[in-house]
Amino acid sequence: MNNIGHNFIAGTRSAAGDKVLKSLNASTGEALTFDFFQATEQEVNQAVEAAHTAFKTYRHTSPEQRALFLESIADELDALGEDFLNTISQETALPIARLQGERG
Image (cartoon, rainbow, N blue to C red; front, side):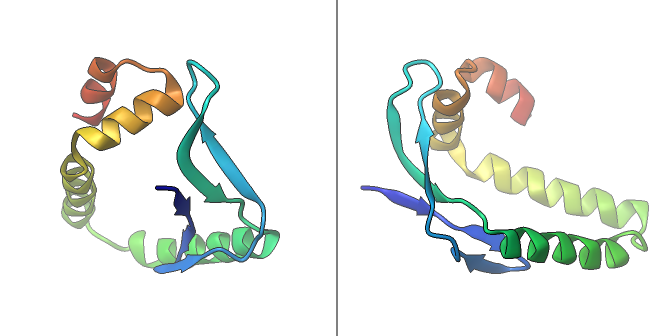
């Protein structure tokens, strides 16, 4: 099964471009089953604008709110499980133990 990766900009999936990038196993050079759409210039500009808009709100949050936000991100990464770590290991050639440490 081939998973096509879309860009995620301001809460919306986008795949305006037609250039598909292959994910490769960093150790063997073999193509993995993950493909991604290369962002177009318009998508990059939209992402920059969305980040700028988000920062206008984020910079006014309290340290406690920021901590909760970052903890939520960590919880989501933890919830991805071992498949996530295996994919990262294949794409980077980093050992699972190191990735587990970095995720922690």
